Image (tube, rainbow, N blue to C red; front, side):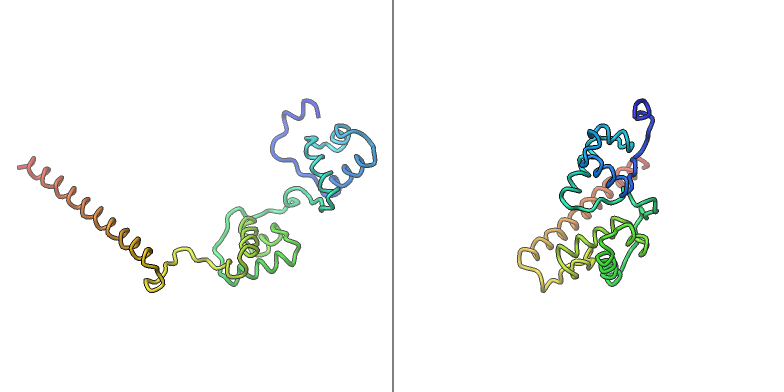
Length: 177
């Protein structure tokens, strides 16, 4: 690409068709990797090598990025039922996270995370248990003692702050008087 290589900004997107044609040309002996990169405007030989490995490994070559569609970058809160529905939709649509994100108005990352959680722990892994505490009758003796120590430390810190505040207040009153 010559001097133009230094003026280009951002990631370059490559279509599925371009990737396949570049790989097929290379495998057919239509030129070296450098020649193929120049012919198709591929920025690095490493990219082409990755595509060749995927092709030879019978993996699907997909378009770069989201094919020009806009993906929400900011997620939104979802219910457990919505998360289950999102996972079902995403799996049914060949794990197309971008399409799932657009369909359910969640971020790409949320759609992907739900799939990862589902695969790791099943449907129950999709529950949001943040902020949930065990009831005292569900805690082991060690957990109960740790919780008690935390509470006592917090009370001690509050008492120390109160004592410090009172000392400063007394000092201020002495200076005035």
